[in-house]
Length: 113
Ligand code: 5GP
Image 1 (cartoon, rainbow, N blue to C red):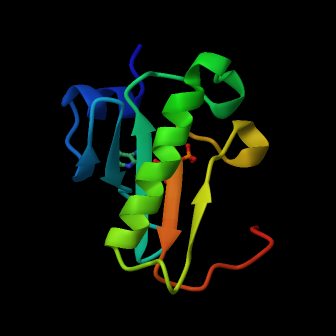
Image 2 (image 1 turned 90 degrees about the vertical axis):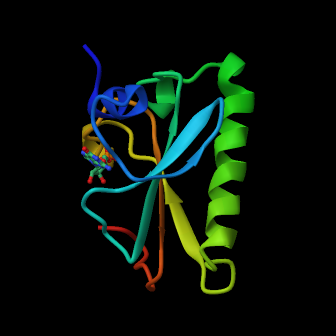
């Protein structure tokens, strides 16, 4: 069964898309945790980072570059931003379709809660 992100990728569920290409899309998070909260999702339904394979290396690298470009486009280069990937229960993963959170627009605490 498709996850929420699978349904967003297929267009079954709407989302605000701020980037899309042949390998990934970026959408606004429905429940933002910072002034800028963007999710970068691969079109390939990899459940979580620990299940990515060697063959996914270029895709993961591409997603990092997309995140960096979005951060620049949003003017976050100077103020800073954070990229997060949650894996499993302790990591706080709730949707089993790999995604990167791009958070910015406020000072983020470290260590995270
Ligand atoms: P996770 O907790 O799995 O790392 O992150 C899932 C993220 O997806 C959460 O930040 C949550 O707010 C977001 N989210 C859940 N459902 C939807 C949805 O239907 N649309 C959008 N745009 N984001 C969603």
